[in-house]
Length: 576
Image 1 (cartoon, rainbow, N blue to C red):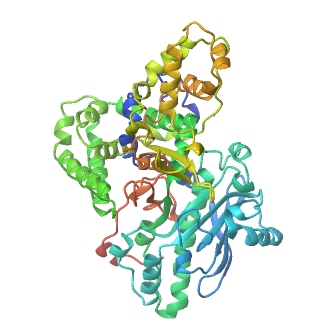
Image 2 (cartoon, rainbow, N blue to C red):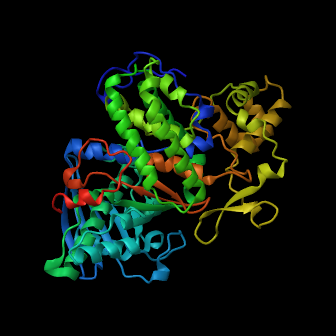
Image 3 (tube, one colour):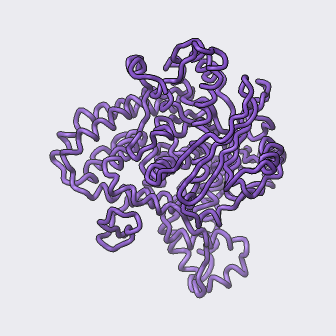
């Protein structure tokens, strides 16, 4: 695949013909196990957002803090940019422990919040107070551009407040268990439940990039969580209380609990997936085609050493993820011993990456993230290419043979799968009646197969291929569709994915051993997640903005692979 780039440092000058880029094979990039090992990179959404905030000098202030001494009530933060004013409105409610549920079936949360476009007069505040805590059940204003909710990590929350109130810093090892104070369970945008649609937002300067408004709301929530524990500690401890050490503040991000609901997004939006992963691959290719520079090795080794420590510090109950992390640590430690000597015999970074392809996907993806981190002047330009046009059309005059050729070129992973084998059609996906939550059922055992969601792209592609092989290749596609209308949707998808090779995740999601976790991690890494902690094969906890600079010190420098501060580091310097 040929892609052209420019030598300019300006993102706007990116699309200029200079030389073709050699991208990795889609069958490798889109392998589900590789997608399930991806890490944050410089063009992950959280990284892009913070560079924008720093570059444009956005300002944040606390407009209203109406919380009781126990931390219940509301708070409003005012965000000012060169182009507009926004407000984060946060509501804190007292709930019983048994009501604290991360699943979509929950009806009450510790914290509900929204990001509002423009001012928040009293009338709007009262409307928000009545509806935001209800989330999906509320009647939400179209001034709201993000609607979300979160729960406390009670163990960490209480430990931090009690420690600070008694004049002590919290124990780092307790914070390391989760890495956050608040954990979001849903962050809605793009017109969901009556809120502001993305189409007009896409035309704005501040939040025109995919998911930037959602990421901003989460980043501001992180600041609220830090302010909240400081406020409560002072209320409990009075003059004895101390502030949380800046290094611990930076270490704490915002948690997120994500289940099967995220997986269908990657299947139903192939144009977006292609844009995200193609842009990532293009950014990587600009690095890999460059000559190996010996003056980069000290920094590269710093990143790799940090990655090793980061993986060692990740706490997860999932045995499979534990083993992946341990394997990656061992492989990266061996890489660190040999990488300079190996590189001395090579010419370009691509050769170095190829040399270490024997490593696990987890370790390879760490190396990829570190290599991309070395060249911000090459990689950052691709941050502006993450939005996608989802229009999918088939030009007039196409023939059956045109589709067959694409299927044979791009869908080998699907057309040679035998779906009469029960293992290849073990699961069916459906949506629960109560909360519209995607779920998995065992075909032939559980009820609901008649409600199956059309996520079986592999099976649809194979069935289309078999049907088309029975037809005349010169037959007009329109005639074929008239005779076989059930294939209209998959034909449109196949034709458009013929030019979007990173759009289809090459995974049979019906297979008995299919891991939805791979889909979740792919999307979350694009967001910029760290600390992947699968709680089962179907849901995961992660952290956003862990290690990120605080708003008052936001900068464009890297914060890859966040590390827990040591006791010695905490003893140095004063708390904010």
